[in-house]
Length: 95
Image 1 (cartoon, rainbow, N blue to C red):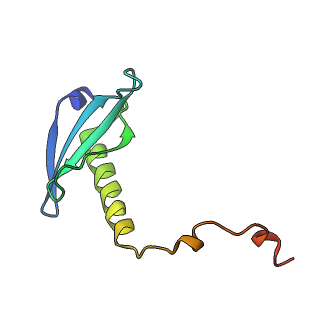
Image 2: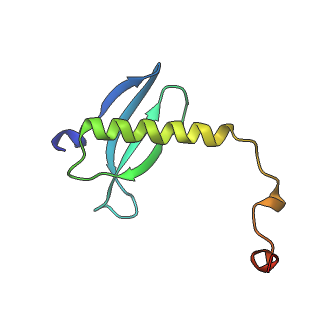
Image 3: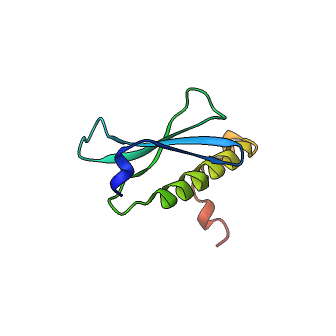
């Protein structure tokens, strides 16, 4: 995507997304898509690497899908700590 090095913005369901490609601070040869959304202040997300084949339409779809999934996960009730890890032998308990 030739235009990927420039910032672009789009609106989806009354949310303004601002996207840009930035080099990783740990691996400068790697570039990541970063975005901010108008419904959150001081939050940036870098959900996936930038590829030469990326198109603006593809990036928009991926960003919206990522963000909608993030909101769905945030809305889920917190699981109690003891449910997060299976207990030892739980897989063999039914045998």
